[in-house]
Amino acid sequence: MIKIQIATEADIEVLTLLGRVTWAESHGHYIDDKNNLLEYLDKNFSVSKTKQDVNNPKNHFYVVYVDDLPVGYAKLVVNASNKNVTSQNSCQLERIFIQKEFIPLKIGQQLLTFVEEQVKVLQLDTIWLSVYIKNNRAIRFYERNEFKNVGELNFLVNGKAYENIVFSKKI
Image (cartoon, rainbow, N blue to C red; front, side, top):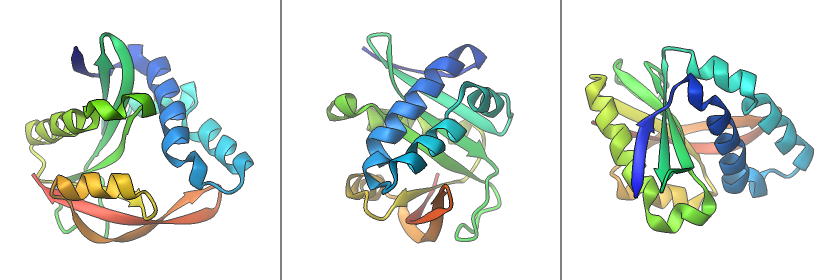
């Protein structure tokens, strides 16, 4: 059974571990210097950083479970702007990750649908995100879900820039 819940401070360790594992699974092979990968994970997916993020009222976290096992999560940042997005009432889907072995269950689709419903509840009109240009599976996923390419940005991993596409969708 698949269940999605709004994350709280009680979920910090789960979010931290899911973040490290899923980010490394989905992006680790693109990072040339594995020391940069480890530094990035340590900086962005520590318990203290996750606690700080969870306690920031602009951030909304959602955890997806399969038979009570946490297998993925999403992070929504309310009122996050991007120069390529015209709406002043938007949010950024900063992270949406599913553990690799659970991707065939199409949980990502259910999590994205849930997040889009939360965006409506928050009375926001646009959701935007960025995806690495070489991440073809993710690009196809967002295009299937009616996200439009509106620009690009550089995502930095310890000072090294990785070109990303900015996708946006009216909700």
